[in-house]
Image 1 (spheres, one colour):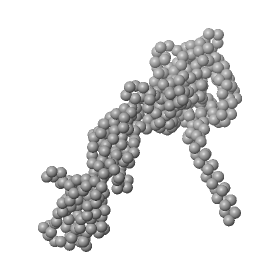
Image 2: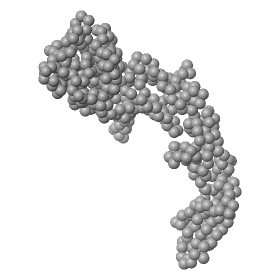
Image 3: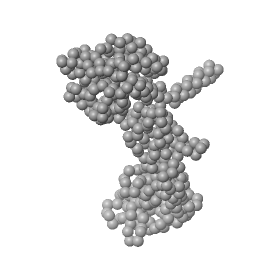
Image 4: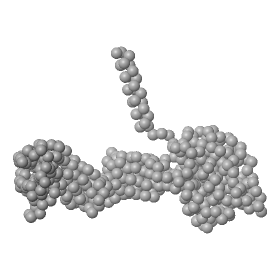
Length: 457
């Protein structure tokens, strides 16, 4: 017995450890591919040195600054460095150092040997970059493109970048444009996040910003606005998805902090987000960019009120529920228990109460107000069937119209049915009867809190 207890204790500790591990966010590995332009124009001067020498110097400095980062791997791809300019080689791109752990010194060593030669082939280089990233989950694939020229090989960098992002291969690339013009800048706006580097200091600053974005989170605040455009709504889950891959990145339960403001959350500035606020019905906001190093305010209209179906007096309902749909929509938003409150967005709703008979009502939910629909206390119908086999249906009588309500199960002889007050009719026939004229009707009334007895024979 003591051994059995010990085994059980160990098992409980193991399960507890597994649960704790499952609840701990898995660390995400960041892979940064430096895509370096080594076309002939990189020999042009920038202040006191050539563009390629400044690029090498600043890349070395950057690599030294990130060498100690956890969950980080880097790689180096270069284009335009193996063929002379007159060859116009539009396939001149090569992965010089692949991704692997602690290869920082190797990347620096290979950088020292790169000499500019040929043409600028950005689209093809981006496309080949997709094959440089190992296919693993829980990774962020980042490309930092350093270039001083626009596409010279009739490729479409924008289309390639968009396709790779939509397939979840890479995140939106960073582009550092050396010696750029307005035309240069416009050409790259659709490719990724663009930064000017017209001076050595500007180049250095751009690299620092890009690396900071690639490695660090930034802060944001979600304002759930009421009908008065005030951020008073809270206590609802928010999901953040990557707009391109559709991957779920974060879940946060919205909170108002001790200062009475929406609480600060952390988001990765590399991604563009689709946010789903899980109100009833949910609210979706797309194409959310968070500014790196700045506090981003995300506003979304989410005014809410409460809805409740209440039953008068003592009720015999064991578990009365009702279906909630937006006005004139067939989609079910929620199935709610009676005598409970639930929040919904402000607006009009159709509710279907699953009592007997079912009731459909239109209700309006208003800001910070509980809309209550009152149901009368039900009664009971107790049916004793003397027939061996039978068919029997119950109808509600409203003026001269009858509306089907309930079919008695033939497997039982005694039925107890909780019903709303009203005028009803039961239509039945013995299963063995061979003529329709052997159909019988019984009219009855259900009163609140009263049992009505009936025999079918």
